[in-house]
Image (cartoon, rainbow, N blue to C red; front, side, top):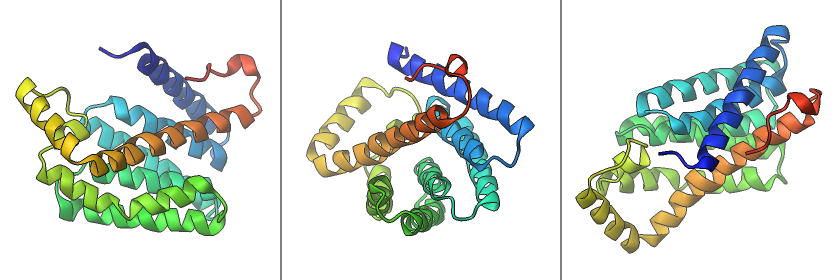
Length: 209
């Protein structure tokens, strides 16, 4: 059962998605709106099954590529695209299939840094992107794929085994937090700041999560 904060977050980003979709209908060349739309989709993808999450991430990638076709130097879109590629890679169960997504992610993070070298979020993302393939390998080797891929709760035996493994591998756990906590949180912040900066009256904005 989802916690109240998770439900609030789900409702917030669903409302954000709807606002962006409506804005796109009237102004399809708004790169900021396309980036916000993609950010909302990336957040919503966390609440889906793996196949649905993959489809939602691909939709976000499409929106970001559209934003970059309008402004190729749009660093927040480049950063979000790197995050989307990373997210998709971790939803891929085979190393050879995930590798191209990790490589693309690193390229987009580097481009974002090139456009905005002082941005700490971009710098941190570029740093941890280098460690992502190694973490993906560990996830596969240790059988943590189901938990990491959001496949739902496992059996008590599996949970116990995973807990022991996590205790032995604190560095892996810390990196996992970096990738799935800090970066995803940053996506939410970017999306919210984007809405706060928009020209819509405050009464039309959803409350922050």
